[in-house]
Structure formats: structure tokens, C-alpha cells
Length: 91
Image 1 (cartoon, one colour):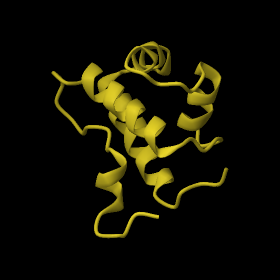
Image 2 (spheres, one colour):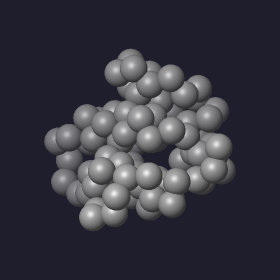
Image 3 (cartoon, helix red, strand yellow):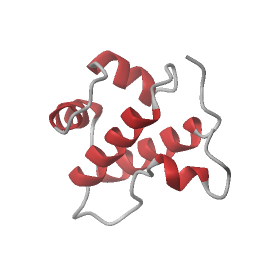
Image 4 (cartoon, one colour):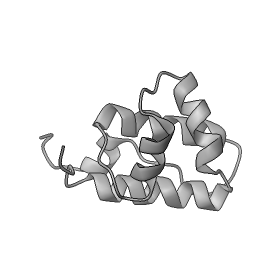
């Protein structure tokens, strides 16, 4: 599967939000799994490093998990795919 052209921006903003809130991939993945995520831990880490593409739904679930973990902290939130798309039509 190839990269959605919005995927790198969504990934980078997720990583930035996690870094600013000191949320590690090791803390994110179990939470993501608990809310219905289906990507394995190694695949999630590879995605966060920009080495693997994952489906939009899984990216949004990672963003949701991160946002719930950092909800009480100041700083950027992890964007959902619709926030990265802007005015561009969905592909």
C-alpha cells in the first residue's frame, strides 16, 4: 500500500503532539488497541517513524488514542485525517 499524500503530515503532527506531551509509542499502542485499533505494535512504531503506510481508519484511531492520552495537557492535538485533508476532495 502506498502513502496517501496527506499521511506524512498527519503522521508528523501526531509525532509532534506525542513528543510535546511525552507520550511514548509504548504507551500509545495499548491504548490504541483498547479502542479498537488493529495494527500490530511493530507496524504502529514503523508508521510513527515514517517507514510504513497504514489505512486512514487506523491513523485516525492512533490520533484518537493520542488525543485521549494528552487531553489534559496543553499543546497541539494529533490531527484526524479530515483535518489534514482541508478543502481537498477525499481520494
